[in-house]
Image (cartoon, rainbow, N blue to C red; front, side, top):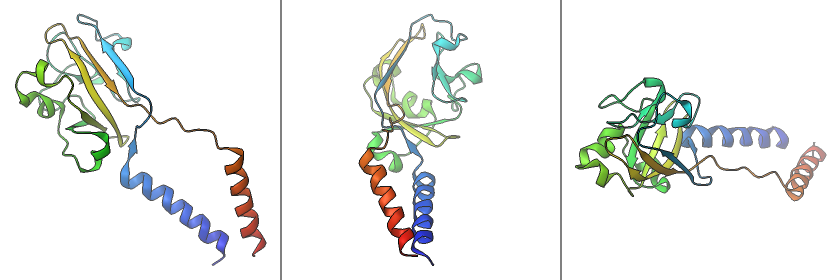
Length: 175
């Protein structure tokens, strides 16, 4: 097998395996999302648009749900998500459940949810991100949280592009 073909096969395997085996982990800048008490959940601006299929929001009572569900359902909301207490550094070893079992079974939600580190798994897109609620309004529906966002991928440097070009030239020259 030619070295160039071997190199390409290894690169494709690495990218495919690392993406499939681990999911996508959002390690980008922290984003704060806030929903004021009494806000109209039906307005798209009152939901955190995570992906095309998962927007987190809340009505004036009960828990968090996916905008596309139309309301909160015990034991399954927000649809398309799994939740675990812990930090993003340990996302692969955490035990995930629905939002209610992650937080709700811990007594007074307004007290226990705030300042507790958690990780959310967006199932369909296999995305993991950190989340920490800083405010939970009880009745009235208000909430605020901080979450991680997609990592910002820097443009390749001239040095990196030159190194890739030289590697290709070396491999091509050995044929």
